[in-house]
Length: 283
Ligand code: NAD
Image (cartoon, rainbow, N blue to C red):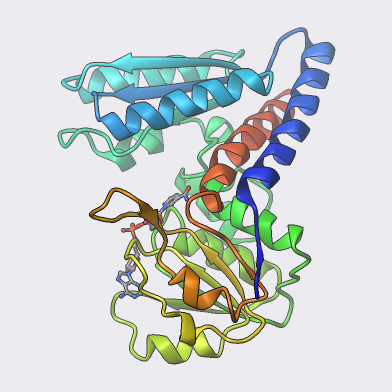
């Protein structure tokens, strides 16, 4: 029977660390670390995410501000705001809530953020630092997954790790982070054959696809560590991950639930990145 990896409890621990570092920063520099979030349009899910980030930042001693812009905001106006935030010395982190409305290109806007303030870790400069194994701001969800592995004492060194999904946001960066920790990493994606076999041979499985119960419980190797990043809404409104939790929990050594697993870690790591950015910028 697997031990649950409680993302809520671990996120609370990370947020407490962040609060203590933010308080120290404020005491030393006479200002709190600053996080500015840009929300364009009125997508209901994005509004909820942004509100959660705003609340979490305030509780962690981070000076948060949300810039709410109308859906029809032009690229030029949005870029002008980003450049203004880049140039403001009291702002340490800038996050543009994605996806943007269709007429705006996510990558063009992300590319305009100062890499030193890119607390989502999505700027190509930061992605490059991760590839070459150097310090930089790293994407929040993969960082949260790594923190979860560390928490349960799972050292990826020498282990066979499987990442399902190859997105820039989750799959690719988590694969690089596992590689950095000396795992033997396989990346599976929509064209992968023999997915069941790949899961069966893996000591660590990170699923980041967005398909309910894609990974069957009996594929999971006895004693594996399973991190389920997927968030899928079922017809009855409940949330579930990419892994058949009920089947997998009898075989895995450790497994994350959905909800209450990776999700809460993402915001905690965003706050952690903001304090990292603040400390790095004043050095
Ligand atoms: P994405 O749609 O950008 O990428 C999905 C990936 O899955 C693609 O690389 C695709 O090749 C791969 N894929 C599709 N079908 C597959 C299959 N049958 N077998 C193996 N791989 C397959 O999605 P994303 O942004 O990487 O997010 C993935 C999931 O993680 C989504 O459910 C998303 O909601 C969730 N997510 C959760 C958090 C969190 O904080 N918990 C954060 C980000 C994303």
